[in-house]
Image 1 (cartoon, rainbow, N blue to C red):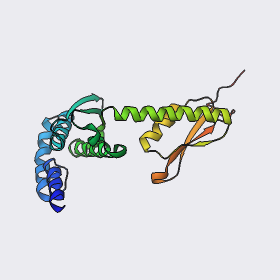
Image 2 (cartoon, rainbow, N blue to C red):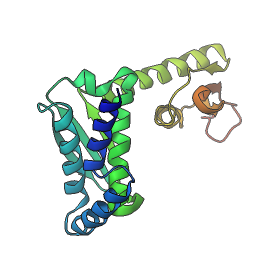
Image 3 (tube, rainbow, N blue to C red):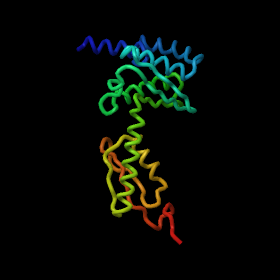
Length: 195
């Protein structure tokens, strides 16, 4: 087990993620190189380096939309990369964000997807929000949705923001934080008024 941990540490230090003294020297040198390379090149180099060590069949397609990088991982065993409930995918996305932040500050964001997992999750959240809005509009009673990650809660809030019959709010702390869909007060400014 110790040997496996050491090899993961070696992998991360090779990619410039760990904060040990020899790596910092390496990062400073990489930082100078990063100034001549753009964020897309730095991101691609990190992801390709990491993914090749996990499975040589993986490859990436990167699209830049302003300060947002949308990365699609293809090839290989994508289920393994996604992990249980998307945790591995989220962890790799986090590491990619850390690498960009080390080289360019916090101005760039990374969204990582594999096998359309993120799109399917987003569609599932959208359907859940629409069903909740319909239920609340029909019953007039608030509905508590299951706990969600911040990005998922944001989808619900944005989707129902201008809904004429419901409004949303987040409640709870930490892992239990969730969205509550409430009936909209007919006198509130966002509600449509009938003449």
